[in-house]
Length: 287
Figure (cartoon, rainbow, N blue to C red):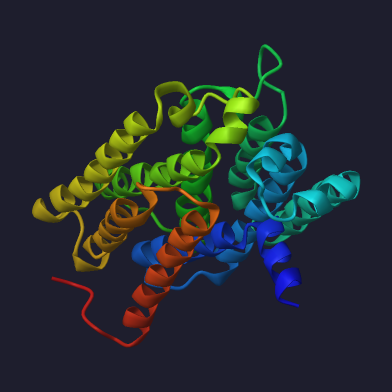
């Protein structure tokens, strides 16, 4: 039973689904004061599809990196892939009936996801095989699904200054997750010639990039709070940056094992969950 659950979690990348959905709820709450559960559902569906398709198309890399569930995906690759795109078409059609204004954003998410996994870009390449764009395109997927989805469904109209602070916090932080997983996958990425920061520049430089991005993430919130663009509810998100820095420095910097990387993601999800417990408990959320 434990093995089956472990495989299911690995196939769906449940840790990524969890942190994406909770981030969606968080930004939705910050923009509207509501928990927009339907936005989180759409977020979960779209990330489930992208993650599972990625497992299908990256079999060689995942095999080299010893990722759990790869053997099962290899045996049922065609079925997994067809099922994903059937789910994608169905969810887009049904979602359009409920929230047609969300469809363009979900279509952009799907298009980027396609170009990330399949060789659809000029030169028969994909975002995953392009230096810098690999991490940036994944970060954009997170921004669309966790900020744009709840904004559209909740009818929010945040100021450009607020968006700049939030994006300045979240995009660098999210990219640190990407690079940390690239540290974990460096052997398979090098074998498949995926130009990640650890492959191109070495692990030491990748570490420096992570520290720099964490500094930008935290500084964005500090500046935003200092000039009054955000309040305590948003500034509290700096806990995510601090937690990332502490765990990276204490554990992952020394050895980026699969277990440590996945635990870091669950740790981030748990922190966001605690944030919502704070909100539901009616504790202070304003200066």
